[in-house]
Amino acid sequence: MKKYMKALCIAGILCTVALQAHAIDWDWGVKGGMDFTGSSYKGLTSDIKVKDNQGFFIGPMGELSLPLGFSVDASVLYLQRKTKFENRENSSTTNYVRRSIDIPIYAKYTFAPFKLFGIFAGVGPSFTFDIKNDNLGKKLYTLIDQENPAPDEDIFNRKKQVSLNFMVGVALFKHLRASINYRTPLGNITKTSKEGWDAILADDFSSKDKMWQLVVSLTF
Image (cartoon, helix red, strand yellow):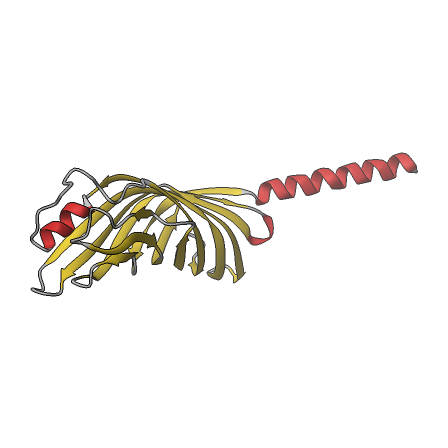
């Protein structure tokens, strides 16, 4: 009798493992979206203001679906952000553009009582690496029509950023998802002393990337 019970227990464990393994799935797809807000800039003179922040991102993604509605979502995105600065005195403007590779990773939970519709939430880090930026100091001195004392020096000197992201969204037909993301940086992007930049800085300069994002993804 004990042998039969042991055999049944082993068979039950094997069946459970097989079912759990079957529940694990991997999907490839594409992800893209828009940034509604971008970097904050502190320390600029009163003559310079941020008029607009916007951006977009797109790239491949993969999602590992686990049992009980859990999943891991990772992507490699081309991220481009543009900030428009305005000179209050004459209303002239200039655009500062940053181009980056962004790698967000989310732990997600999806509640989908119906096969065609579900809601999900997720949290996770993102790792951003700048690949090509405009020179911000050069842009701002051009904006105020003054000579740049250090034209080759870029006051945006940090080329990587770690952020924490939160998302909520809806899933349609299993493969189509739309979400609203909030991204908050873990530390300043840049911190620069006012010294030597008196024409464009009223105080020590710092900047952070806090962004609201609209994200759409399609898996195959």
